[in-house]
Length: 235
Figure 1: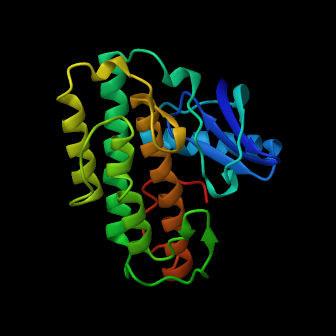
Figure 2: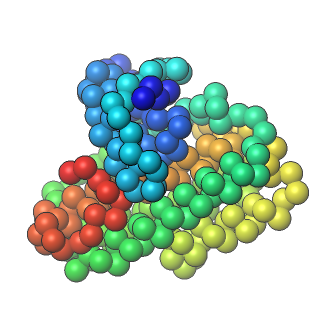
């Protein structure tokens, strides 16, 4: 199976996205490392999303962006060529369902962690400050992009309640706009381009980043059987 991918890189540091598996990603110190990781990420994603198993996976880079951002820490501002243009109702329903499943599964993973404020991870700092170490910190960080993400496409909501609650409210506010399927491209914070398609991808991607970190932290801190592998990570 050949799958189109988008590469964002800062020198050698590379962030690879799978265009057809919305939110699937791989990071590497080089594009070659990211490309090697992507087939395993796609299989994990297919298992999580309920897709049909596939054979050998070959990644084809169809879009590339050189970035000044710290992509090694998952900082990204790329908008895919495929994230422009009108959305069909079926496409929106499918991607919204995945974004809500992702929030629901993230909440389930968080709820399963035995001690939300305990972690064996050392402190580390990135472009946005200290990396969340505990399940509670990871959960709050992941939940609290809700207002920011929706705000980038001029949808006004909040971060109240669970990660699932606030994401559902955001979609409800979005759907009150009669033209939301036009998938208008907005220039948001830091002159970054956003569209509804990008927002949907960013939610799933951001969940996967921090769900993987939470899962790894939990099995290292509490033991391999302490939490379910809700996202089917290949770890």
